[in-house]
Length: 359
Image (cartoon, rainbow, N blue to C red; front, side, top):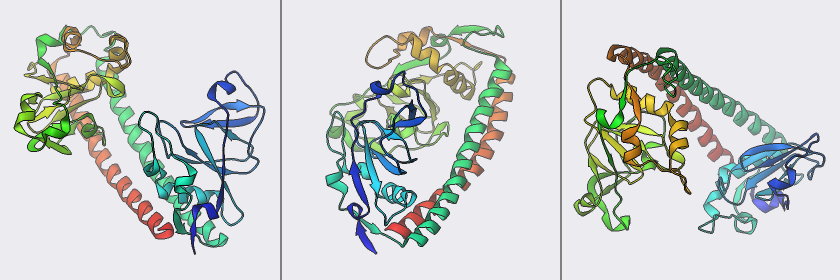
């Protein structure tokens, strides 16, 4: 049966602020945009419900929460009516991708009045239970695969520390030299307004191009710029190591497999000394993310300039030891590829079933 979202739930609101629950205790959980905040001695909802992030970061994110709990004011209560299971409603709302209804530039918002008319297929309660069970099982498989990938990432990091120690303090006393003496470090540049320089054939490397997935190699970009844009940017060579030097992505590194221009949020490291394997250097820089955040000049966003990075003392273990680590990491990466393929297959099945059940 085709129905509207407003046919199966009632909107509820919260006036609670996160500061209202600081230092509170109790047995009733309270949730915010990022999930569980803490426990308090009261609750707003006595039955399970769905909540949607309606303001700020994570807008549209949808969660199912238990009876005798509450959310803060950046969340929208969607209280299920008798014709729908809370779990089923949660899947329905996730399927709708409510983030597409956002308004506002500085702080995005979504409003119930804008999405309450969205339609979907509503099954009878017994069929809802079956659908919830099927989707729940697939989500468990997806979660398991994601955890496997995370554990393999942790294995690589643990092996790095086992072989090279804590390079934050260089507890194995490796030889160190300023990074600027070991490679050429340059900063990217962004032609502005960028819209006037798009549509060419030169790859335009933005931070977002490198944050999809965890492959250390970047092989393509979503956008390309014209030659006039190249003159206002920084063209770097295939094989260069690029390093995010500002904002929330600071410390994020990739090796590019093509010539392209880098956004001003990147530093590029070229002509790397033969005593350093670039894959080892990438892993070493990733190990130092918190250090880089700590030494970045104060400001709205942490920002590392070329002067700071050139002065950074880079450890130089024996090249054969570096290559031993890389061979280990490559073997782990093969396992990750297989797990990622299984994860992608499970996600595709989940998405297709969501479309089948609710579309």
